[in-house]
Image 1 (tube, one colour):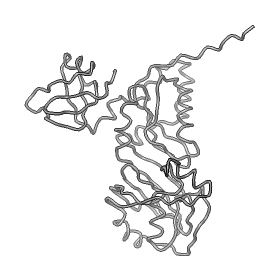
Image 2 (cartoon, one colour):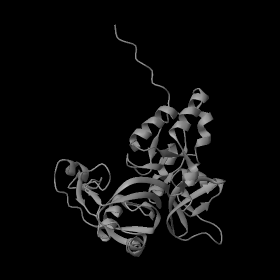
Image 3 (cartoon, helix red, strand yellow):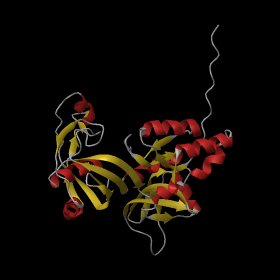
Image 4 (cartoon, one colour):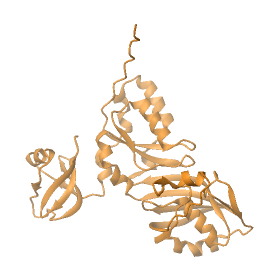
Length: 311
């Protein structure tokens, strides 16, 4: 006699963003798995991995919001991080092995003098223990296997880098506002070297990703407690979600009529009307009644949808 099959719990159709305050010590995928067990969504993903040894802003996209993930990942990020001087590790954080030491401890004046060199568009060599691919392999896998990984310097954008605090002579706290692809661990390493000492990250917290910041964050404990009180009623948890359009705030918005919205949903291009209608744009979104209809581009005054949003 065959065993009766265990019925899978039905998935919930959820659209929107949840900005998780990821705790220290948890991987981004582990945090995502916990959210899945709480909300049981049909579709979910996160916008930008956060290291296990970092805490803070981890935007989670549900349903149609997953189509807007690139807009968030390409947005600016703000980090607050502590650098401990005198020690450099092979991972540029506390997880790695010590590879260099120094007795030099820079003061605030010395640090402030070099910070302008680390702002703007600069070249940065990523950490050897990073997810960058080398001949199809992740750099951190090669490094863990004992291979001497040589990564090429690449341009990054650091919009702002400030000294926020100096708890003692061994530690300095910085705040960095930067673009996609910036490694804070590499900033700490390079700051140490430039200051004639060594340095590695001992604390790291992400404060902002794209449009999402600390005011939007919710903890796993808050969600778990709310879910327990809701007793399975997922609608009671929707107050934690932000609208899909929150991810699109930096894109041009093109309001369209109900008829044009219907055409766009069928994948058809529509002619934009009005004196101020743009003639061209690489990326924009069409909306009707304030609700996003589609992502797309504008060419010769016509909006051409590339991703339809079913909201």
